[in-house]
Amino acid sequence: MLLILDLDTPNNLVEVIENKIREMKCVPHRLPGAQRLAIGITGNKSGISDDIFLSMKGVKEVHRISKPFKLVSREMKSEDTVIEVRGRKIGGKEFAYMAGPCSVESRDQIMQTAEFVANQGAKYLRGGAFKPRTSPYAFQGLKEEGLKLLREAGDQFNLVVVTELKDTDTFEMVEAYTDIIQIGARNMQNFSLLERIGKSNKPIMLKRGLSATIEDLLMSAEYIAASGNHNIILCERGIRTFETYTRNTLDLNAVPVIKKLSHLPVVVDPSHGIGLWDGVTAMARAGIAVGADGLIIEVHPDPANALSDGPQSLKFKTFAKLTEQIKKLADVMERPI
Ligand code: PEP
Ligand code: MN
Image (cartoon, rainbow, N blue to C red):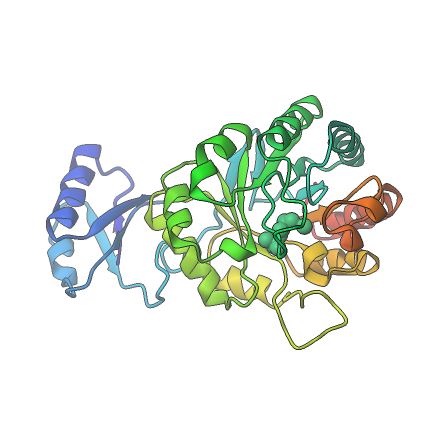
């Protein structure tokens, strides 16, 4: 349920309305928006009648939300969500260009990569310190040491840092070093993790699960929003299909579909999407053309010797060529980087 209030409703009146909602064993959520004052109501299991609210001072309209995801739906909030992080904006006109290695491997590797991508015009540095690997024998990441290096590289080259949080145990540690918390595909439906990050106000980048539908992804985003954190960026990173020539199938359909269903920004990850370095550029171009709010690209100084995801990582030279093309497309799309 969604209540639209008069824009100049005084705070004490808004609180009266919120208390009324709590009395009915529901949860009020103040929804930030430039044009209007709105309160989303979740947990309405008993079918509260609209009249209860319509008769209250300050309430102008009452709307029913038809989708199972409420707070993240376009019905709840028609304008696009714009997330501000370290002076950058995701989801507005600006295009979020994110790049970096799959894993942080050494000081030299992350510093070199950060310097290179920053010179190319990327404003965000990615890099995993806690890596969820299919094999328990594969490189698991440098952990806190990796976070420290990532932070140092981000600060030195003025890049917003994005890194993955793998479990609730390491939440405080990861939160302290990063600007954006990434929730990986394998954890998209780790509901206790979603609830934990929902209590933080750090921006979250939620990656689509390997076999998750668009609705599953939006329901997971709803968990985060319902716990109180509305700073959510969705990431399309490819899904499992019957195709074997590519690592995943990058579902670019998801971008316009999510844009219609939700007000949240969407970033495309062509690296995991196709899983082949020589296909990344084509899929990145497609990602910006289809209307994504950003791209996240894996780049490595020496992909042949990378400790994770080498086959899909771009060498510096290839990344430079990709960037040249993305900048031209960004002009056409009127989405400055
Ligand atoms: C990654 O970003 O390196 C990663 C592990 O991604 P995903 O969770 O999408 O597989
Ligand atoms: Mn990776």
